[in-house]
Image (cartoon, rainbow, N blue to C red):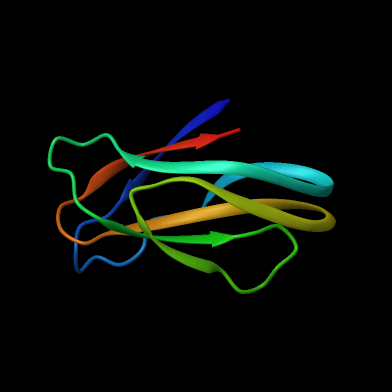
Length: 95
């Protein structure tokens, strides 16, 4: 399991930076969880840009064990966040 941390800006400040979740060649799938590690937890928006695709999928977190799948390519799967209230640190678990 790989653990990555990202920032979800507070309400009104837009999206955080795109974070690489994994880089791969060929078809690949992974289970991904998004949890807040901040003291002032809040719900947050998630956009996942699966490798080889041009339109991101949108979710509301926290969320556990969703499946992401990439095309047959040499590419990166990326994610970004924005908080619904206070800024927070998001823990990304990839397995």
